Image (cartoon, rainbow, N blue to C red; front, side, top):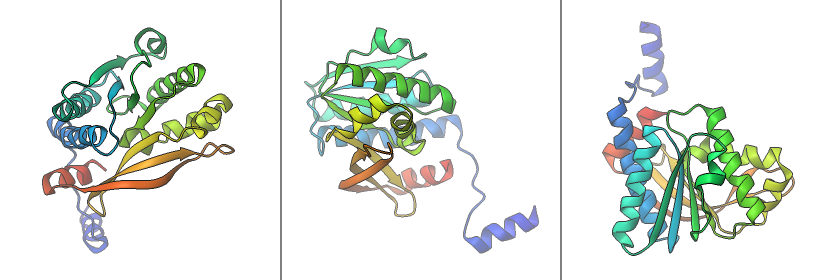
Length: 214
């Protein structure tokens, strides 16, 4: 144990304590607040449908983002749905708002998160949903959209043709979040950053929580 601690000091790392559940909520509060401002400001969404899973962490993120968005655009149309299974997509997701946000991560296991993400993208492709699609930092980081595009030619073709695919990404080293226009390669399905649309510095408390979460 002493050797591990010494190596951590030499390499510049700290043996941070895992986040408590309350701190997980707080981290999502900071991140969700920033996302809502992005929706209202940089991306100028006139309305949004927030699609998430049924985990409490994603619920806290979604609530913070929606509150922040509505503070800036109090008359905007907002819908939100919590998915438990892929079958919920047809029953709950309307695809009627100008933008769709995928906030899928939290305590839910990766395979369930992937199945939910894939089901949403399948239906969006079938409907040829023309609104913007926003990918939350965790959904992007897990590669859920990329995996769906790689494994399904219809989803890949649909997403590669969209110029209104966006994400917010966090960089713990730089201490900032970046709003990006994303793209999906038409051949490989790989997800890429097409361009950075803006950045925001993370406050000290937010950044400390984010780094401990890694």
